Amino acid sequence: MLCLFATATGAQIKKALDRSEGEGPWTQLIIRGVTLIDGTGAPAFGPVDIVVEKNRITDVAIVGYPGVTIIETKRPKLAPGGKELNCEGMYLLPGFIDMHGHIGGKEQGTDAEYVFKLWMAHGITTIRDPSAGNGLAWVLDHKKKSAENKITAPRIFAYTAFGMGNNKKITTPEEAVAWVRENAKAGADGIKFFGAPPQVIKAALEENKRLGLRSAFHHAQLDVARWNVLNSARAGLTSMEHWYGLPEALFEDKTVQNYPLSYNYLNEQHRFEQAGKLWKQAAAPFSPHWNAVMNELIALNFTIDPTFNIYEANRDLMRARTAEWHADYTLPSLWKFYAPSRVSHGSYWHSWGTEQEIAWKENYKLWMTFINEYKNRGGRVTVGTDAGFIYQLYGFSYPRELELLREAGFHPLEVIRSATLYGAQALGAEEDLGSVEIGKLADFVIIDANPLENLQYLYGTGAIVITEKNEVVRKGGVKFTVKDGIVYDAKQLLEDVRKMVSSEKAKTGATLTQPGLVQ
Ligand SMILES: [Zn+2]
Figure 1 (cartoon, rainbow, N blue to C red):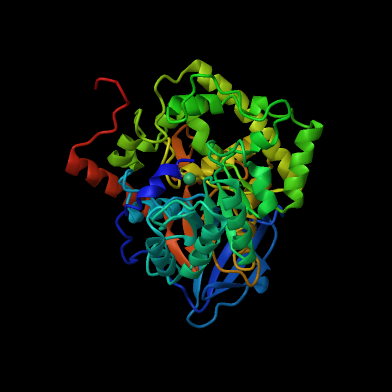
Figure 2: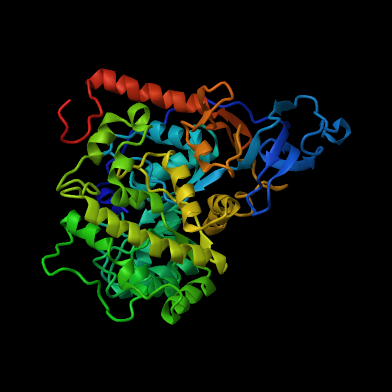
């Protein structure tokens, strides 16, 4: 949501260091004895041995039945020079895809190393950078290094902020088309839009589609009155971010949001407080207009990337602000960036309390109803986080997004499919990514607990469980993240981040105090 102004500066964060983590790839890697959740929507099955040659899956072999000894004769044989990873009893999923992953920013003080490790520690092996906030050249450089595995980082898809690099605002269709062609030539994977005059957006979307590139759109409120999600989808937009522009497409007794007359868009308390009352102004769920808009978007093969988590502070500010991982994993500079401010973007807590939170809880219900039904009718919903804003931390916000899809009504298998196969489809990368199938790239999440039973096992800090001996322990946290056949110790990556944070605190003397409280 917040990339809006951050992108304008193009100020760059520190580059990722050369890779010193991960083992492999091998001529042959056999991951033995896992229960597989393959990402297609199929139920879990196992025990399974998965064979990888270099970076591709070459076999998925069922090697027995639950609860009985593995049938040795069914097991794929280890070839000379091959490597075995015994993961008996563990769960294996496709690598996760974060469809809305900003690679940190100068204002947040979050360098590439910090962000990449938090993502990889949570099994995120692919991200789409929606705006290339560090500049397209910077992002393409990291994309290339990640593709070559020279750095520890997810695969990167770069969607440049529309108009980025132009020395003046694009105001004509001709300028739009020229920019779109330049962007494609530079090697971007797509475009991220925020808003522009309708004729400019239309020309840009049509040209981008003609060139075979993809697109994302945060329909900023300054432009939604004259160009909403439906206009974009008809012109060839492939995915929408967040939710802006969707209630506007669903209006039936008004054409602009019911803004109070003192509203000022640049006052972010106004902006986010009124946004919490927006879904109520749209057509009621399952009404003819609501149905018609939904059905048309689905017919256009349109993807919705809701990023539920990034607004969660709106319905429960204290939850977001006091999440247990902040203490060990949030950098002091990022903490400072989150603090209430009339100036910083996304820090609109001038006076945020019961009334605002309850309005947002109702807003979420209506929004989630749309998203769940969109999925039920065959629409594609993906998982994106937009972390680095509003108390949402890279990596940790991902399981939270999964939980919010679950809350919207998705079955956990539908949640995982959105996180994997549907993300790959939305990126146009489903031949290589998104499910555990023969021929695809070896990107996996391996975890010592069943995430379908509790999505909270996917948090780096795991979930609390109590043992038979009445001891409180943590269960879960991704154990191995596999990307391109390279096996990373996910817990060690998280430990690296913890050290980065504690050394930063020691160096600066900064502590993460709650805003306005005297310590
Ligand atoms: Zn964003």
